[in-house]
Image (tube, rainbow, N blue to C red; front, side):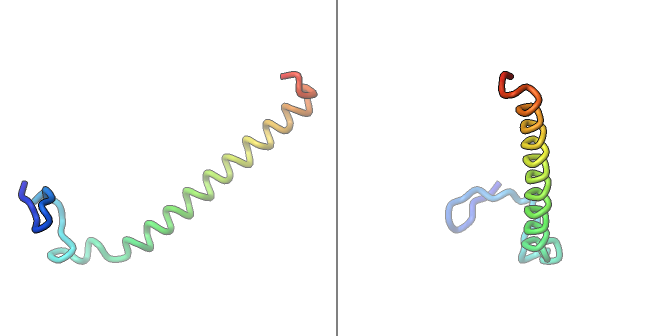
Length: 64
């Protein structure tokens, strides 16, 4: 491992954007899409949990 000009340790086996730019193309768009997919999945899980808890509350009249 080496250190860069800022004194940070840099691993030599990782790709570098300057030497392999093709590996870093469209990274921002892919991360935005992944965030959107994660948000949809989490929202769906929250809605399902809310519906299940609402039904359980109605069935047990809040005793549970």
